[in-house]
Length: 439
Image 1 (spheres, rainbow, N blue to C red):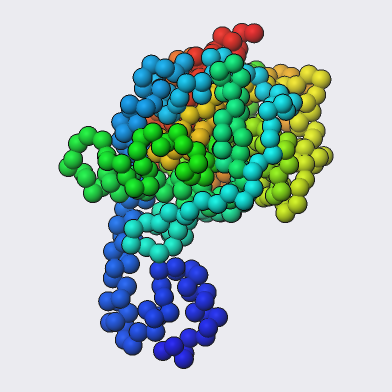
Image 2 (image 1 turned 135 degrees about the vertical axis):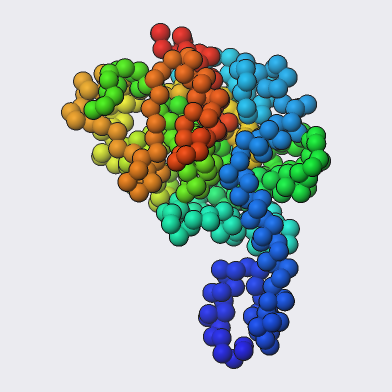
C-alpha cells in the first residue's frame, strides 16, 4: 500500500489529519485500518459533543465557570462599580467613571509590544494536533451549508500587564503573538469545561481545578495563556432614521450565528473585534485601543473590507482616502459626530479572554451636516448571505437592561442569550446613562 501512495499526497493527508500516521495509512487491510483508528474516532466523538455544548449553550458553561470563580471575583463580591456584570473582575478593572478616548488619549502609556513570546499549544485528550486543528471540523455540523468565517493566524496583542491611572484601568501593555496561540490556550478552556459538564452531569457543585484552567486565582495570571483582548463597543445612534425606522435614539446589536469564528449563537454588540495591529510588524501607535475601535467601526458598519486582512508590512489604515474621509466625519474633524467612552475590562468566565468595554455615541444629525447620502453598510461578519444579523433597539435605561439580560433577540426560532461582554457594555452604558447622554 505504501508504494501506491505518492509521498506528496501522504504529506498533504498528514497535514489535514494530524492524528494519522504513516504506519496507520500503510496497514495491510481495511479492517486493520478501522481497528487502528477506533481510539481516535472515540476521542473525536467525545470532543465533538463538548465543543457543540460550548458553541450552543454558552450560558450553561458561564454559570458553572462563574460559580468556580466566585471566591476570587470582585464582581460577585460587591467590589465592582457595576452590578450584575457577568465578567470576572478585580479592583480597578471597571472604571468609576467612563473615560473619553480620543486619538491621543493613550499616547503617554503606550509601549511597544514585547516580541518572541511563545505559548504552549494545549491539546484535547486523545488527539495529537492542537485545538485549532479540530475546532472547525468538530464545531460545524452544517459546514457545507454555511459560509464559515475564515481563520487567519495573524499577529495579535496579548496582555502582559495592566496600566492604571488613579486606581482605574486605562489600558494594557502587550506581548506580540499569533491568533492560533489564543485559540489553543483560551478557547480550549471552553471545550475542557464543557467536557467536565458532560462527564459530571449528575454531580452538583463546582468543578475541580481542571488541568488547563488551573486554580481560580490563576485566571488573573496573564502569563499562563495568550490573553488576546476583545474590544467590544455598544454603538448608540442619536437622531438616527432609516426608511422604516423613525428618527430617534437607538443602539445596535449583532445576532451571531454558527458561522462566526468565536462566540457563536449569541447576541453581541457592534462593532467588536480582537485587539491587534492593522498590519504585521505593529508600531507603537497600533497598541492604542482607540485605533482598534475606529478600525472595527469602519470595517463592520461601513463595509471597509480593506481593513480586514493584515498587510505584510506596516501601513496606516487611516491613510486610505475613503477611510480618512469617514474618520474626519466621525472622529477626527473639527465637529466629530462620534465619541468613544472606555468603561474598563473584565475576563470572560469561560475562556478567560480580556474583554474591553466601550460605548460609542454617534450623533447622526452631525453626520448629515457633513455628508450626503451616507448610510450604514454592514460587512460580511454581520450578514449571512443576503440576511443581515443586526438588530436595532430603542435607547432607554430599561431597554439596555432588558437586552443585557438576554433572551430577547432570536436567530430562527431560538431566542439567544447575550454574550457576557455585550451584557457588560449595556449595563455600563445604563449605569452612566445621564453622563453619556445628557452632557
